[in-house]
Length: 386
Image (cartoon, rainbow, N blue to C red; front, top):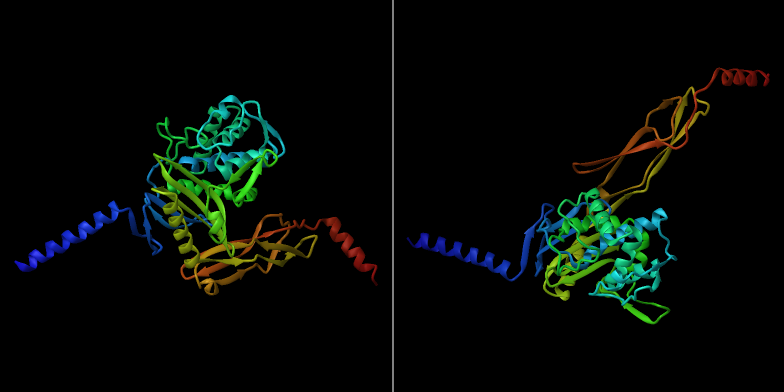
């Protein structure tokens, strides 16, 4: 009887501790990679390697929540893509509509009819999280805010962000119905934005000015000030969303993305993001295969050899395992002409335990087949030597 009573008492205590941990906002979970991290006051979180897209840690990562101004990551992605395509230019002066000027919330107080360069508008969005600047850029890229929002949702679907719906460009959610995303989807669009290296020129700014120095901007991402290696990306806060962030940092070639959603304060949000990043940098590193070139004999070709190259490759590994990666090259003794540029000829295999990555060698310059004329010329050339 005493044993039974003790058993149920212990079970009750364990259950109470579990419930208490959730009430007090603690997430103590073990991810598939073996990570065990205490995060205080977090509704959902994820840590992703930007290079490979591999998830290093997650907690409620697929829970749909309002993202607040983290929404602007997708706004900025479409703007950067428009820049790359030549649709807009950094020095282009963009007029501000009455609708854009009236966005409210965090802003730089644009006036209807005011003109500001795309460069300064992007700076205002990234550094000060300006809703009016985001709307002005969106109107320029999409024609109308409504069409731009459609573009945001189309791009989200292309990226596989299946749990995301955007209803505006900025994340204001007083009147939205289903403006939602997840920590995982935020990491995905953050990773895509980081492919546009120009964005880092803005996200690393702590303080700057616009309007010829008349208006000061201070970064809403305070990690820029004190976290080693931080290089972005975007914060957000509304009463519905709580405090959110997609924080990106790079050390020794390892670029990480930490997403935090639903924290009660900016301090708690930043601490959780820093804890995730600390874990990632302490537990992982990159093994870098620098690439390789070789020459392979060509039978029946106008050239005797063909040059082949294996592209550089970066593999995410646990700390200290870089030296355990083996590299095995396999190249054919010869190729038969004709040899086309880009065709595969052999491979290099990187192995770590049960992990294997094959990187193909591809031909860098084509080699044509010898023609009858080439053969005759060769014979005639050889005869003239005697």
